[in-house]
Length: 342
Image (tube, rainbow, N blue to C red; front, side):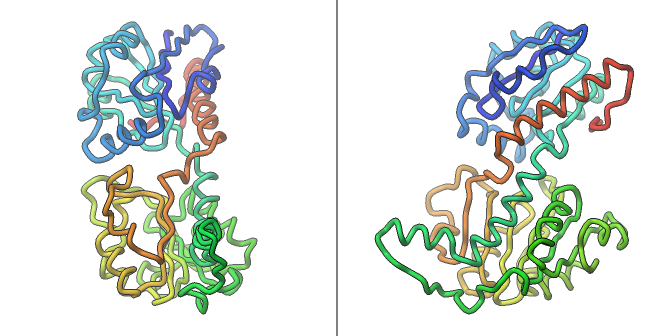
């Protein structure tokens, strides 16, 4: 089997080397020159999320690199009709991410090509940052740092009377899957009250995953000091959090989104923050990335922003390769890999 691994700024050759040594396989590493900086992979990732794999450009060099491949492994590089046409022998696609928006899965299925993802590769990283962003927004960590760097000693911020010990806070988790349950486990060390809501899980399973109570969405929104979401989002879905949901939240509550931008109505959130109808927000994902000049969040004083970095750790990228290599090891041993998405 010939496996062509398409490297980029997120998963460079140094990490992709781990794909080598599979028994009976010729593994070739190809670095896509248009994806060798973080901004480029962020942009193509957003194109794929919004418009699909067919809207992503493919270079002639990449088409040449995959022409004899039986399998292709990609991180952010697209696998669309152009790539599939250029690689007629293709049987397997490995995606070093949980989301497979950069792959035309429907066309792969029609052509009998199996697609595998790296589900869970950055779950720990996202869970870590979710909790960090709760603390950062409530305790004014970033704002305090910025003030000091500007030569100012600021100890009193507008939310000073809403800055509590975490042990006295209630955290609502929308989506108690792999990441949501990891967030719950991390929060238990703080002694928080943890509410869980997940339409795909029975009450007992939500409790087993670290939540103190299983509640409906409306109850969670009304009672929580922090609301964090870890749900799947498909382009075109209605937002999980819009104006009506924000209206249910406490005036002091903080909304955290380290999942998908589309889960929250950006304009509704910006209005709620501007009018102080909720206490604050911590946001890692945006409708447009990189964040454009004049974005409504940039004029707000009660929001903490990070550049879609929650899942970005060296360990997460290394995990991606290890997970996909594991899928191929199972295939070569005659097994059925667990991460097939089609």
